[in-house]
Length: 195
Image: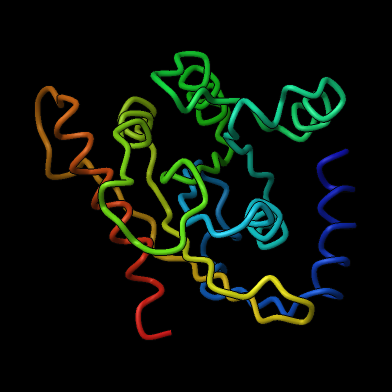
């Protein structure tokens, strides 16, 4: 309930402040399946843009520093977000991610782990691929393009859902997870080409 109220208020504010347009989100919004949404990360406002573009609740993975303030941590938790330690393997974040997907909910991740200005495959991490594999969950790449200035245009491009493991058999090691992470990142940024 709190999530829906927050998204309703944020949607009004976002459309007053920015010129927001969402592209190709119909199939995703009309589905009741579980997905992982992976998007590029250009601003702290990106989670808000994804949340207002979705008819369904997105449970976001966020850096643990956002949860240090007890009040904000409580609010983020109530909104379905959970912390991740970006400095190493975060088992609690993996468990929380799998719990979200096992409930047939939507997991939101920014796979680069921090805000970046341009594509660099070195920013790809193996964790997102591992979570998708263990949860047997498809991924929807999303590209956010825009200028977070007053009345600036923000375009949110949803890609096609994809099973990144349909061509893999047997045990998958960290190297393979990293390769798949790079593929996910390429698919995200391909959505922004020639836009």
